[in-house]
Image 1 (tube, one colour):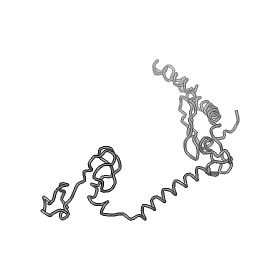
Image 2 (cartoon, helix red, strand yellow):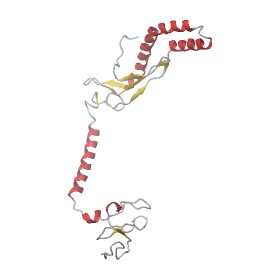
Image 3 (cartoon, helix red, strand yellow):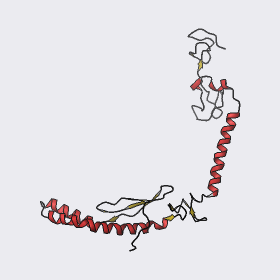
Length: 214
């Protein structure tokens, strides 16, 4: 077995006294892979001795204590061996960038054409597509900001203005009285032009203050 193992920081140790397992992750996107669980022989022996000790009133307690003391060194050796095997298991899924030395996943964060990670050599096609989408969004917002609107048309009635049909959910044009999709009448609340009280759609006078409605 080689003396040194390549991975030193891009993993999380999920090992327990019963076995060994690790999660290796990409230092760019954070996604990764979990190695297969490997049972620990020393952990199984200790568990068996502990079970026997509890069942037989402590007859095997001394043997269990000895096992626990010996397990430390034995478990560490088994742990190192299992880690090496787990690292070899996922090694083909990662590449270490020669420029920034980061370990990145081969599937998403490695630029095979350039021989560098996506941070050091971004995919031009992806960058162009992202830049185009961002530019289009910015232009759309700017176009809306420079357009003139009839403010009264949009704010009359405050929050009671509907943006979509209550029946079919289709978008409604400002001032629409019927839905263009299903024909449902758009019910909008009316308010007195003088006191602001809510009035019926066909009311000619305000029932609260008597003001004639235009």
